[in-house]
Length: 495
Image 1 (cartoon, rainbow, N blue to C red):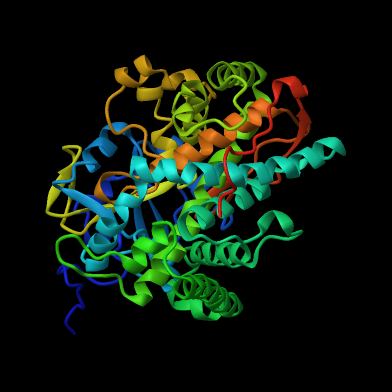
Image 2: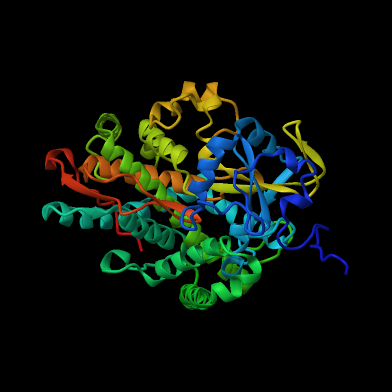
């Protein structure tokens, strides 16, 4: 029987490492490998990424794991990752976890295969939506959403209650991308429970990860109930997004936001437009990717700020020096919070919320001068381990230290050692949006509150393809009113 191939000529479906790594036997694997099931002794279905990090520490900068007959190669050594960043030899590989999201996101920007034309079309149409001019236009809406967060935290502070940091950051970032990108208000802060969009999204992400932990032939049997829930979750996401699009079409163009671009803009060279189905896929992609990873980044940063009073004091002093008594900091003032940005970058170094990305060889090549790869062979880059490589980050790489991102320190490091947003042409299109939003929010919270952790809390990281601190609660304490101006944006309220 002839092998089925994609339009690129590569085998269709999952490609095990045996197909693409001629010298696979030279790559180490965990001990106690068992026939048929592979490296499952001691493995956790709930924390596969953290399991892989443990193996990485023992096995070195490149290693392999076998799960139910599927062989995976993992890479994290800085020199190897730098080689994988060569766009003339490697490209994005839509790896197993990401491919599991295609039933919900299709050929959206994040999940599209390289050969699918809608990726380039959507990228070219939407890239201007993240220009400096566009970002400045989003800034007042980011402030307005942040005010809803601080009103919520003010009530908790007045009552001496802790706040649910991951839950509140999820509300914040969902509302931010929904309002700035699509002119929609989910009313997250007025809800006692997560918005149904969040519940369905978490369900699809969790299901995509669970698919990786069972033998493929048995998945329909073992995950029958979960599969039905996933189908219902996808249908729910589709209905919510279809309603957002319907409202926009009925009400006419907005203010040139991302949804306007999707519906009204033709490609500047070809004149092509996004189809209705692809618009739905792109909206889902932006709503999920535009809030899930940013909420995790903010949550990790707030955890470290609550545990490092010296870092928090230094960051707060910068906010007060740069923003002064300005009630609503301007767009340009956010970029001047250089130390706050270092805090964010250091949090993303230790816990990049999109913790892995896959690269495939676009031609026969040799990785790092030592590992032959056939065209189509792929490897999963473990970003948290790349960010902990002692050859780059030093023997204390596990320690939280924002000064690692001092300008001089950054210049002293080689390229391709910090990759929280992926790499190359398929890196995150919304990177600057996420960084501006997160830096703004950290500045506002530092200026308004002292944050006290639960002394008994120890950082626990939950995985659902993305990473998030689990059960993180902090006690916000309002700082003196004279030092904390109201955060209400100047001018008329945003729509």
